[in-house]
Figure 1 (cartoon, rainbow, N blue to C red):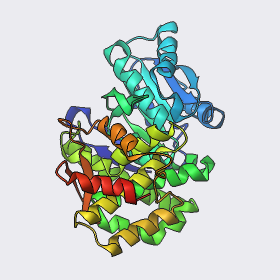
Figure 2 (cartoon, one colour; figure 1 turned 30 degrees about the vertical axis):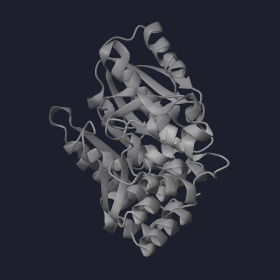
Figure 3 (cartoon, rainbow, N blue to C red; figure 1 turned 120 degrees about the vertical axis):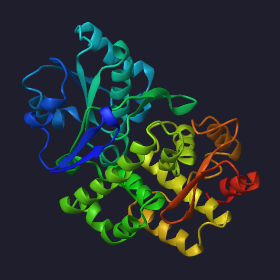
Length: 360
């Protein structure tokens, strides 16, 4: 087992990475407050891992709630099912929620923990690659609104993150690829040596080699933990994690939540950011070719929806509702080079429109 720490002073917490960690009661026991535990999971994950997860908390009073699976259910209506269980079972302020699932479950459970009785503890047990390397770390929680992704939420840090890499053995190939989009992102924004490592080892990751997966997860979590420690609530530096996300979130919302996976939207959105970065003079044709190649090898979309699927007007309206908009300006994460990202709202508007028109 490997252990990392997200350094947030008194609110610091560990990330445990390894095989066979689910069901390890001694590992999680120190991070449970009180005696009441509610496991939040979904209809896909529950048959696979709920019993093992319950074993982790066998010395506590454990209940569970099973939500429908899919990004389209990441909303306030579904979230109320968690509150119904908490209130109906008379959970108190010393309870602990456990997020067992992918990014949707993690975000919703974290938000429920932030809101229930004005804040209770929670533990992340991510079962998808995307959640393991990104959404389970950093305390971003929330739900979607029809007009924007993750527009309703809160920053609420977990007590710990338990990443059992064995859970990736049951992950669908499409979901594994979606997670690789976020892994590749870390190499592009802050860690060129990691990007070069991924170019060499990508097929091992697709084949679910446990050593390669553990290395990729650890390096991704390390990169995220370092930046979260410096900028917990995204006042500046942490916004770099949003490479491709302003474009990608527009794709997800515009095409209907659940039709494009989050990682697929991020992949196509990143390629739009790469194209615009080249127009801005930051990247070369060779850089663009390398980035295109690695997303393509990861079995991810390298082109966003066609003009027929999403007009420029629709794109811009959705992007204008993004959380990163400031004073009406759409702020983008672009690349000066591989491993060097920056956030800017200062770019010629015609370059953004050229990107939306030409890169389809």
